[in-house]
Length: 123
Picture 1: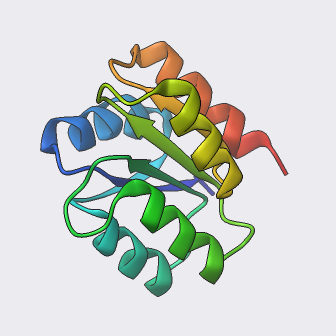
Picture 2: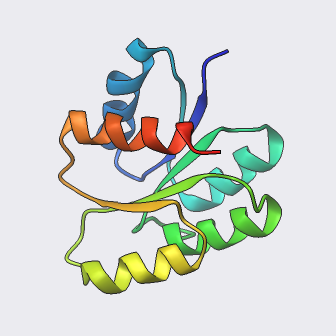
């Protein structure tokens, strides 16, 4: 059975990029527009991996990560940032909150696919 991936990003183009890159590889990709929707979706059905944009309306990626890990401690979550955040500080924050990794935009398709596959292989 193929892995199910939830992508939360307020930019439709980024959600589309994930679908474009991952669906041909057999992954089931669901996209939502903010962190609150991500938490609601993940509470309703299981996902193998959740990808959260750091800067989203209603609930930031970091806040959504904390809520998701409180509900499902074993859930694999990646956080992506495209802003001018302090990379080291953001990475330390999200890893401390339970993220599997932190990526920074712009993302190369090959790097994106590699990061997803690495997380899905981890037990």
